[in-house]
Length: 228
Image: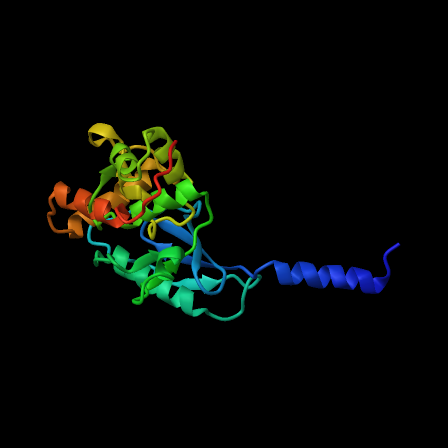
């Protein structure tokens, strides 16, 4: 039998091993967004069940961010940064070069405005790295991403894109199917369409070749190619 002190030790070890997670909500023009963080980096962002229509002329309505009382009682700096980023995004302001995966931030002197820390396999991480480089208002096909990351299967890339735990900041909505078709989206094609239309209204024209070059440059220094 365990003594009371033994149970206490087990509880203390368990508490230390589990990192506190915090949750907040953001009311966007396309619905409620749930934000998750470990207190330092952005670890999750997803659309809730409530969906609102994005009307022409809207520029980031309802930008209130509330911490859930069961998770925290005061605001965190990371949530302040996230809500400002979302305000800019839905107002049509460019958000390029403001997001970086934590593994990349550790190797660069100039830290990005938002550090994201998604959990996933090595292959998924590689795909998500490529997604971060897609410019605001532009789209890339699953096949193009597959070529960029050295993968022979666009379907495998599609699965990795669909598993993205941090929407918008890792812009999986900018990946479309072949021949310009919209393709799937974890939160529904309607939200994907509205997000792309919002970005299109506020983005300058950019040659697709420039986009592909940017993606290639981002990945060229990685020597390891992941077969699939």
